[in-house]
Image (tube, rainbow, N blue to C red; front, side, top):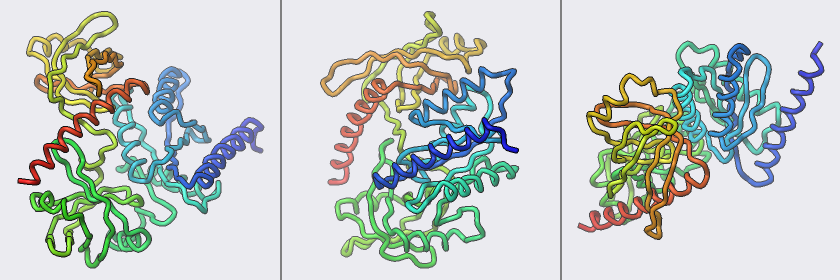
Length: 373
């Protein structure tokens, strides 16, 4: 017989899942649902508490539902399948850096307008079980239309997807910023894709050997060689398709190199550790260059899993310098470069986004001048 508290938990979880489904249908939006496993050890309850707090914070304070058998469910709002996969990879990477372990059992699916509670839970349960039974893969995923771990061949999956929705984005990187264009697939046959591009982008593609393709229904990035450019008809022909697990074009977290020197200081508590100059900045990580003496000062202090403080000044649109104090964890120290993972609050994240946008505008202006040559 099912215990009363288990029944209450089941009904509570069902109500939350159905509320998310109703919201998605009413607002014509989607979400991804993630199920992951974690075995709770009450002798180490604080690790469990800190882990759940970390996941809650890094999924925009999504509710965390506890199910039986040490499994949990979270929601990623407005996240399509490829975005959900990238988010969970990033979260798992940070978990390993902070807690020294990874979430090994992860199943992901995306909501659909015809979903019921049973349909979406059966689907994410399937991928969760596949992940739990797998000795190699940590993450399994799929949608109501496409099972990416079925016996279907990749090109057949692509054909079905393009027939359902022909819009894709083609992406490249210019000095750390994304150059993207939304296009429609005009033809797809034997692994060859034809798309119509904008005339002003032709000079850029002429200087590239390949591009990256993203589609809302595809969890993997597709690398494609640029085979031909028809300048009269504005047609780009792509081939030699490769499905990648990750790619530099997943730019939900854009990394920018400062154009001016930004001095930074790393502290532990009230004690200064080292100072240096920032070499790159994003919403989730910052790297900075330090001297040989500073590297020696960090060595042997066992700081990799301790909460540190990073301080620096960041320029804003009105040219004022805004002071930032960010909690961080050391990710790596290679030669004289220190990389830290940061967890900015909403105000701090907004300031970093504004700075990145300023740098993007500067680089895009340089790109336009380069393409006119």
